[in-house]
Length: 158
Image 1 (spheres, rainbow, N blue to C red):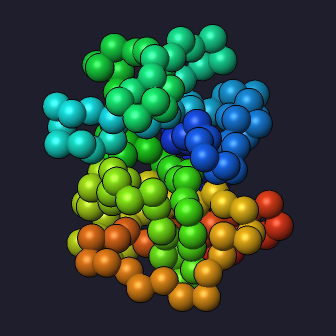
Image 2 (cartoon, rainbow, N blue to C red; image 1 turned 60 degrees about the vertical axis):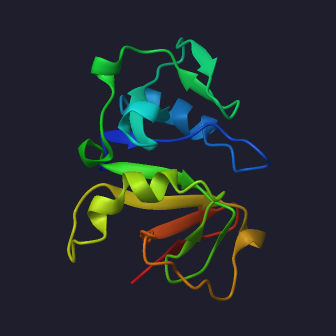
């Protein structure tokens, strides 16, 4: 998934989340296009994704999370990405993800719920292995992951 992806979204870590910045450095070396989420009130609290480079400037959003300073015309929707690496609080081996509770990723990815065989974007959670839970009961609005990469293993769903 990662190797063939050209447009990849990451995030900047908060509250002890796995830090994808070394992976972002690798993406730039591989000439991949890297994006970070932008929280837009104009679009009903859905995420857009802004291109980011090593020299990008940042401003804090309303939650104190840095977002790249880029013109909105450069933002892309999730549908335009090949791979999205998501933060999480907990996960199970069925691809269920427990987030921070804001629902921003679920609202932004709701277009994937109605598809039975969707190709992109692929969704991979990044987590510490101790965040793996036995079983999460998904809510109707939850969008499942194709896998989770932890500090110990890669768990792919069937």
